[in-house]
Length: 75
Image 1 (cartoon, rainbow, N blue to C red):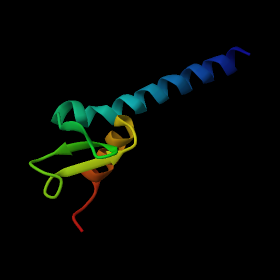
Image 2 (image 1 turned 60 degrees about the vertical axis):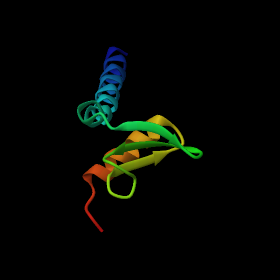
Image 3 (image 1 turned 135 degrees about the vertical axis):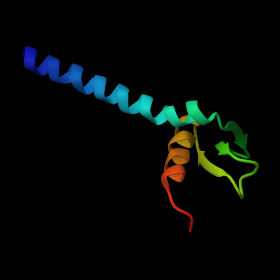
Image 4 (image 1 turned 90 degrees about the horizontal axis):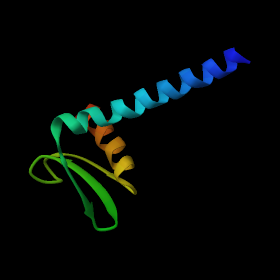
């Protein structure tokens, strides 16, 4: 039983570490976070066309989209 509890604790710690990592880039770069029409926007740069941007139905989902865009390549 203790092994099961320890495994659950380890899973919780890992999940918390992953979640914290998602916010490290935003904390470092300090992009603008705002509502754009009916969705949240995280923007690093002068404007949506030229900057790095992520949109989402919540601030958290916009951060995830921003991180994905930051790691992406130019099309």
